[in-house]
Amino acid sequence: MAASIPASPERTVAGDFAAVFALLQPHMARLDAYIRSQLDGFEPEIRAMADYCIDTSGKRIRPALVFLSGARPGAAPSDDLIRVAAVVELVHLATLVHDDIMDEADLRRNRRTASREYGAEAAVLLGDALFSHALNLATQFPTTEVCAAVSDSTRKVCAGEIIQTLRRGSTNITHADYRRVIDLKTAELFRVSCFLGSRLAGYPQDFVEAASHFGRHLGIAYQIYDDLADFFGDEKRIGKTLGTDLASGKITLPLLDLMEQLSAEDRAHLIDEILKKRPPQLALRIAQMNRLGVFARVAEAIQAELRVGEEALAPHAALEPVALLLRLGQVLRSQVSALSSHGAATA
Image 1 (tube, rainbow, N blue to C red):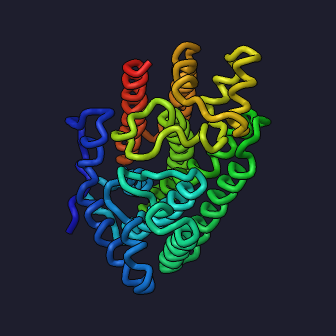
Image 2 (image 1 turned 90 degrees about the horizontal axis):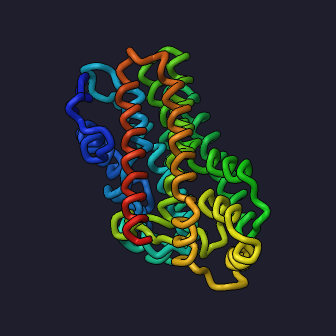
């Protein structure tokens, strides 16, 4: 039987991914074994393709949210938690396959993306197959609640991606527009992971709602971080192609903030890059972001989201999952600090 999450993990160093996720190593081992067992459910002709997407090098944040929000003192994760963690991870993997096609990305987790490995046409359908299998697993619960929650969230994720895709190459994007997209395409899966984990663990409804609220704001914060990392990350450490947002005409918070700070002439040049009328000048834009304080303002937006999520958990501090969930906020703060150090070194 898999080990439970330690009831008092005070020795864990806050902000260290390895330390936080070491607590979940037995859970992730069971999850990996379960997901691998699902390969037989795919047609023989595409099993190798599905296996290519189901690697174990990712951070597995969404399954971690399922396990942490459903933690019980001294209890190993139930089979239901393992299955629902697999569901949200498969949905997430499907979105990554599709994202990489739209971003024309070459790397994901330090290797070729599925679209580069198999071609964009096959990768589109591969993502669809992963989505479909996730929903099939969701139907295997005794009630329709899990399937309803996952299918509703999947639609929202797709809607967010559609909205973002239709706005590529447009500079008529507001802060509210940007937030709406990331709330749908990223935060929704974080939210439903916390909802399902706490719900299946049998926690009271008020905590389920608080955990869901935390997950949503953690997801918003994480997407802002990811958008910041697209400019300030280290490609080898991040494990994916950087600079894709500017190159693909996707306006994110760092670009929105930069446009607001630039002179009229420089802003016009940047808009031409977003509209693909000029080649993207990534190094120049990073230098301008450093000079104009863009990093600090975007980093503060991340902090603000984390604070809102943490406030939602505060009334439930005595419950086992709360301290564990709060560690993920500290992890993200640590990651932002690492970006800051890298940005300063390359400025």
